[in-house]
Image 1 (cartoon, one colour):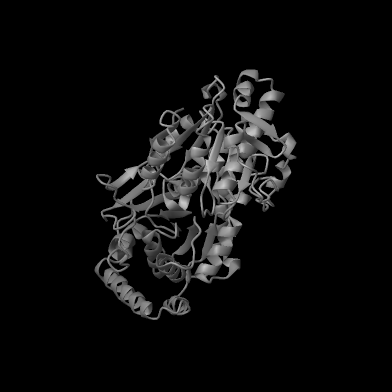
Image 2: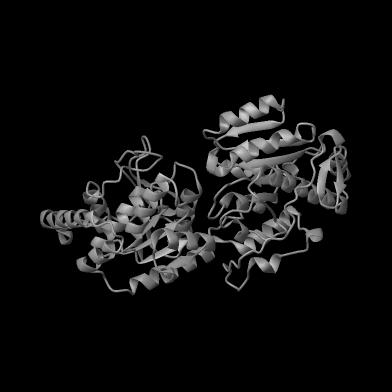
Length: 495
């Protein structure tokens, strides 16, 4: 097959969508498919670039308009997108991210060229605010004629079906994966003087719950054995710097800022506990990478997160400061018990200097500063949905253990994650979607107009009609049968 991945979010930008597109493309290339990536320019990064294994990337000469996305015009990008799709003899156009304008436009143009289209929604979105209304309407228009849609979690599927008003039969759930060979544990990088490192890696924005994190950090100001390492950047960084100064924790809260994805593993292995405070999340790649590196994960119970990891690798909390704080204390308790079982006396002793252990977790040994356990049932096990992504039928329930037998051996964590998530299996399931849509008949212009009519945005029919006229003019001006085909890159393999 000849596949075109389209998104506004790709390298050199760093994020979950970028990593997903790159890793999926790499495995598809190893399976013998032709894969190209279509994105906009990033600074001086323009034109055609070749990445690992000959992955061809088109950096179109279009500047981003807002939040790394191009200005939505549809008509202006037709000549460029048509030229790329026809010269590369593309069969499947695969758009990524509901926020990506380029992905929506490429899917619309691909449909009008008679190609098959797929869309992957990587995030959850609300229904109330103005930006949500606009994004949901754009998603509804785009998915009106897309052959198939992919979501990364079951809750994400429900959200997309409601937002885009599409039949649930046309939506598949294929989760993300992580390269466990790269995200391997290294306990030797952890401090050996009894200190515990709590790692946070996310964009410092409101949606990631940084306000919750700012409420949790000061509660550990009287426990000198607890340090925080925060990776990422964003508008909420000033808030964390202010909290760090007020709590007099300048030497214990390390704000690293944005780093390249290749450096994330080196920071994760320094930690014992990973905290995620997202307020909404379809699928959190960060917690999977942290678990693969052997960290105990504490995360808010929102979106598709309960589907991601078994309960012995993750502690779920409510999106509240008290609940997240109790979750961190529970993770510290688990780590203390693990140290005792492994007879790691120096570390365990270092923890017990500042904490007394109770049946419900750890509370500060200083009575004046102790925090009462939350009345919410935070310790109740979450019901995790089945995530079947193995070559052999396996699901998260197969790895559920009793809380007292929580698996905290870093290498055991890596083994569990590698069993649950791997890019090979994700790619095989995506290939089945491609094969299914290639067997579907090509849609006529009437079918496309009827599909857009169901979105109840009738003026959009005028845009589609104008786009059709432009395509007819381009076909007359530069017929596809006379277009020079793009040359194939032949990689030299070492013997």
